[in-house]
Image (tube, rainbow, N blue to C red):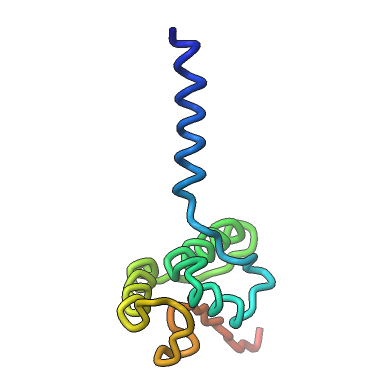
Length: 117
């Protein structure tokens, strides 16, 4: 009986994962601001999705590259707030000219330090 039940549960789980999986952001390495804005405007992904993708990429490379000194612990909460603002300001989706060009786009500030060493 268990042998018959396990494949059914696996199939249902796969169906659930397929149906609930959100659209993914574009490849981060080559993404332009225009592509990211278009994806947010079209609802292809959210600021939270985009922030999670960038955080995942940082975690992938941090060990070997020491990519970041600090990451805002509120990054996902801020992204969720930006998504809520987008939804409230432009409930029908599409381009939202009243929001700034970087609204909901994660930003990384590079720390440039000049030393004489």
